[in-house]
Length: 620
Ligand code: F6R
Image (cartoon, rainbow, N blue to C red; front, side):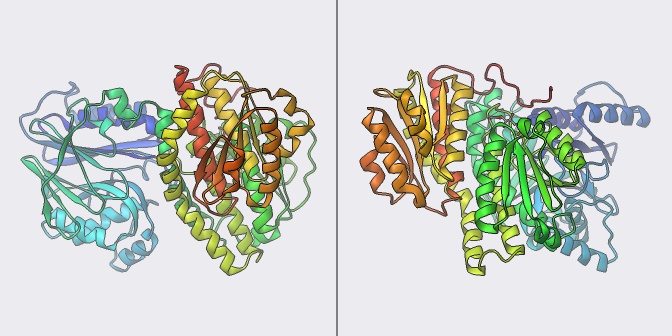
């Protein structure tokens, strides 16, 4: 996810901004840049790669300009600037596409997070006015528009620009003609203002400026903030000012980095609604069957078979994806663990599409499986969360999840984003191949759009009960997870979360398999977690649950609201909102992530960095 910081005050803004970017580094980025006022003009330096590259570029710029290299000297005059870390969405990772972006004259500069959905349309409108954009980004369109509307009042030009934008975004603008003003806008992306001693900060996260001030004004959607050296004004979209409500943040710096959560894992669980929403937006933009890339209409129609490969959590997402692709699009799908696929001499026929799922884009087995498939003539698609990763270079086409950087070692928001992207792909396939009626397609699209809210509801409602349950079961020596159909990937993934962060022996099975051996493991009070969200096989699952109860085991069930029978069979039931049974995967996994999280915490463990685990497995 991109990061924004802006500053206006008495310090050298270039230094404050660079430090702020360092504090946003954890969010992930592939390029960065700073624009600041110096000696009566605006300077701008951008670089691809990490902040060390930007630091070198800034040093080279200072040397070239003959400016003093002494760090952080207080200046008598007001110093203002904006800075950004970019994670490429529109246009490749190049210095030219990095922020800040300027209008054609260099008078207006902006840094922007989010996506401007109608930027192509706006670019065409600007072209009619003889204004050409020079980068591939949506952000530059915003700078050009502000300049076009500018008539001596930056805030007014920003407001007029916002009126013609659609999408979700936050940006901060500065203008040569108003050197002591910054204007920020928030529209469904975070933006907060920090009030210091005769200085103001604006950023996408409090962590960017918390070392300087703890006095914070949170902006609401549609609001515009005008920051001047002598104070700030917050206005609604119509330009009417409101009294800025100041709050004091008491978190320590470490906690600020986690947006107030006690761990990255918990923060990332809570970020799942936005990971889904962002991924769906991106999918809609890139998966259009009429579009450009190698998954256009003709390719989608001609696919005869799919093979999906991945490891760990990504493999579980593949299992959920297979069900959607087969059920909705009627394309046969095989799923394999990448480390098995690459050694088993797989048969790849013409018309086979191989999809490699890897959130990091760097897992050795998945990369090797993709290369093997490509060498045998398959079209290879990478599904990843990491722009610029090896998987993006090894594939014919890339589908991106937009979960933002995941720091906790246990995959949570990247899993849910992978599942949702596979659903979007399945619906596109179904549409291209006329495999579903328009009414059914529309219904599923609607349900998919409701997922972010529903996942948010589950996080809220399940957190407390899961904490209590985890505290009760904290020293259980063994857990069994069971599921059928779409409940199976949830059971497998829930069990993986528990074992990797709690170190509790855990097994997961297709519920119908239980009587073929694993039932021997059940004793009095063994906790058994049943995912009972697939209506089609509910009676079957209930009969499995009865077998479990007959052994004296304790059943915790995840079920859809309205499912009455389950309460008679299970000791604890966590209900999730009803939706299509496949989409339930995204809801049912949430209580299990929370359960694993709270159980590990109750055992006093560090969930962000479990022993023996690294976030990316690149070694052979
Ligand atoms: C589990 C987890 C791992 C990864 C696996 C594959 O929480 O994070 O099981 O899912 O190592 O990683 P990627 O998706 O990066 O290929």
